[in-house]
Amino acid sequence: MNLRGVELWRGKIDLVSPFRTSFGTEFSRELLFVHAVGESHAGWGECVAMVEPNYSSEYLDNCVQVVSRFLLPLLHADISAESFVSNASSIRGNYMAKACVETALLDLRLREQSSSLAKFLGATKTRVASGVSVGIQESLDALVRVVGEYLALGYLRVKLKIEPGLDLELVRTIRKEFGDELLLQVDANAAYTVADAEHLKKLDEFNLLLIEQPLPEDDLVGHIELAKIINTPVCLDESITSLETARGALDLKACSIINIKSGRVGGYLEAKKIHDLCLSRGVPVWCGGMLETGIGRAANLALAALPGFTLPGDISASARYFARDITTPFVLVNGHIDVPNTVGIGVEPLPEMLASFRKLTTFEVASS
Image (cartoon, rainbow, N blue to C red; front, side, top):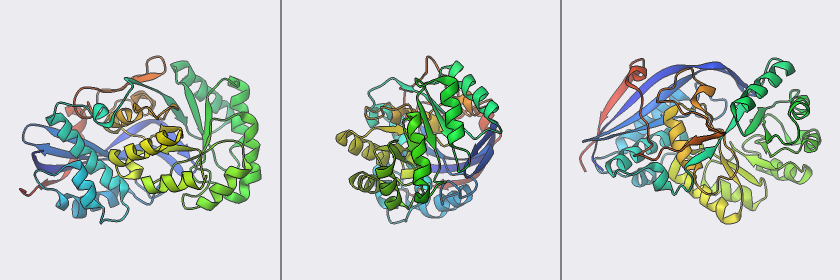
């Protein structure tokens, strides 16, 4: 690879509607892009960290600092994504910061090789089944209306965000309105404790696909106890930060399904390892979302096209979140979204959209 420099770009894009979860409400998406520039090609990576450390201990300003001060100095002209990951292992955590650099390096290298990320990862599908994540609404009537609108668009699965006091009635209402055939799951974003186990067991009657991250991310013992009490499959999200944590959670039977997010585990190389582990054990996985623009969405589609992703993920059409995406928009066709299969991640920012961003820094890499 012929890496000459790296640029950091910062900007913001408004959401089409507020997105409320148990840890807060998002009205817009502040963004950090990594642009890896080579001699004749360039690659892009999107940081999925949020403005505040609510979903994760990482947050956007922190990622800017980590990338600028600690990760970019590790780069040299012929570095590979794999060697970057190895070099960056001395820096604890900061998975989202590492992931966006890794993605940009992968995108650059694959463009130079005229190959796609989907092919590189081992994708077996050309389109991915799409589900939709529905935030907490102001009323049950509003929830029914919103879910109905998404189903009319063709989404194949619905995920409801829940929190204490806003859970059973939400699920009961949607089941009654749309029937038992609807693929339905819930996401607590770690809002409960193991003391709520008997309450969460009441969700069993609704035949849910899964309950996602019901307890705090570091409460693996609590998830083990919960999984013994409830019949609804437990899926872990925030708790899974590496291949090792995924293996431990499965060995201890803390979950039976895993949500794989590349940003949360440090990049697509680690995400593929987790996928391969789960595939070898017959454990279903699916690809979660972090309100990504088309940059992150394109790369997620390549990941979700791997054979172990048997459940519809959160990779929705661009219009689900943005009136106008950073890239050419992804569209939903018969409940599916096509996987880019040109070169690299398959997309790049539209010049007129990037014009509203500001370049934070340009880092020139040292020759090897």
